[in-house]
Length: 52
View 1 (cartoon, rainbow, N blue to C red):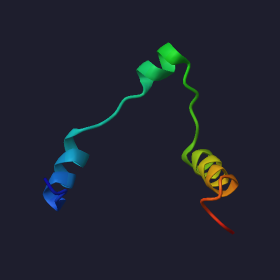
View 2: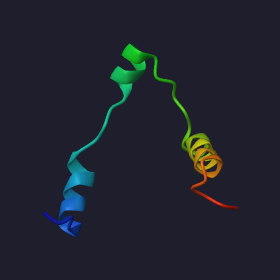
View 3: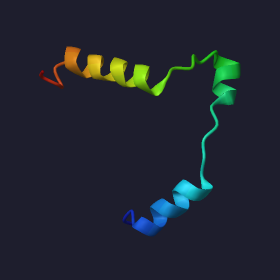
View 4: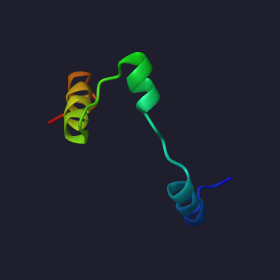
């Protein structure tokens, strides 16, 4: 089924994600959004997906 405005509203209102188990059991490091975007952009650039 298509993703409608109503479905997006329901998803954003009632569904959330909790990463505490991954942090606790896997030692997943916490990274800020800004740092994550920098790393992702660098990866895309280094792998030829972004040309600046």
